[in-house]
Image (cartoon, rainbow, N blue to C red):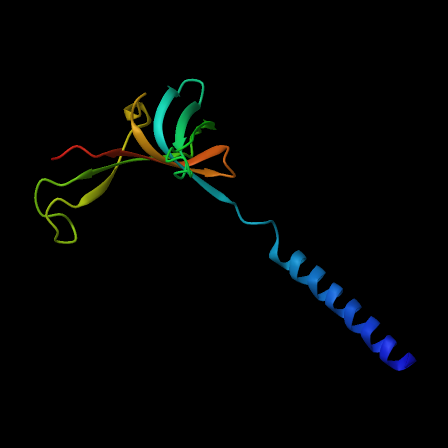
Length: 134
């Protein structure tokens, strides 16, 4: 009986040590990406901020909640524009969506965008979607 208790205690201690080794070997935790999609309502590149009205899932009442998120924009933020091609695109489809680089100054209030953030605070990538027909 005493031997079983000692083995169980030793296995718990071994698991704890292995967990600590695994955590210390992994270094810092990876960045957690949070995505928002909606209309940009306040773009201020000089201040390094923007506000996106994120459209949430449809609720039981049939309405989608809209939540405003203030996001920091910095020198490492990547800006892109996605729009339809007028002819055959890179993968051979007519009218496919193609992503191209966009200057920060090309992001405006009223744009529909997908904003990928680091933990919901700092923008890693902002993709403006031009859904108009080519």
